[in-house]
Length: 450
Image (cartoon, rainbow, N blue to C red; front, side, top):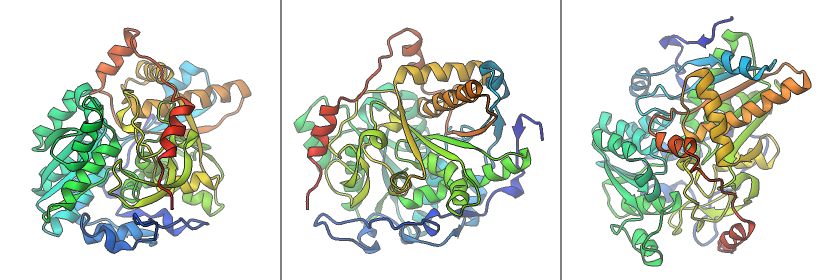
């Protein structure tokens, strides 16, 4: 098949999500309570619907997608996969480059794949409102969209620096009926605590999570929804990789290298996990590369240990690569990659050597974004631009080594609401930031001890 655009018909939309927990050749350490003892599913009941909790702890290989969710998915799914022929020609590489494009969703990213599912399950249990956090705004936009479809109220605690940098994301959420607040706020105890420490606090995903969890835990008709990290979120995103595998079949190819950016891990996992299942079974061999910013290098400089998912300590402790839940990241433009930790499933696979991790500086990422935009035509969001930088490096390596390889990556969203970042780059105002080792040591010193 020689087409540049590889499409699936609506009747090829996957009807089941893939759960990689069923195929892991190792055991993950369980979540812990604040006392350091393992907790069971019942600990999640105050903030999550029962079906989400069941999926969070499930080891079933496949989980059926409800018909109501499939009907919403069909508004934009299956999403296209493209052969990046113009990029290949520009780089003069023998590599064949493919990208799965999630920017065609109503919210402009991959996030609705789990937002729709979570809104549906909450509606089924009679929940009135969902509280959540958002970094760059993609997740908040997706949940606002999903809550609107299912008749739920939605409150979004948006990291303050992103609230100020990305007003159009806020307007998008408000257009779908969501209440959007710059975090930290004075509405919650967690927010007040952070503002008391720093009245100009730029916020972090950890702080915003604390506020949203507190909101849900203190109101009986409010639940919490998370856009990344947890098992059920990664599960819902595997609709991406399941489609991509079929599209690679149609193209007559299979990736030698799989690439995705990582903030919490959901877009990378959603794309890569259905392929990694082949690798775990010994059916295929390839490299899987997770890409992050040097400003928030959780996978490349963090440590693998238990930590809270939020800044205040309201969530269970998860075993993951972390920079410490007290870590407040710098004001880089890739707001979706500013989380202090990563998904336990992803971290376990990295720890066991199934996945690699690399980090890049902000300006070289935007260099790559412009190369892509000027060859393929799509302006990428700053987050997947990290993946593009890695893809370009790998394609150049193929050229230098004279090796013909297949590279697949996920373009998880467009950059139409990130043009202020491009303006800063084009005007020479965009600065690199590499997190100093001493700041990492300071943040890690605050990790919980048992």
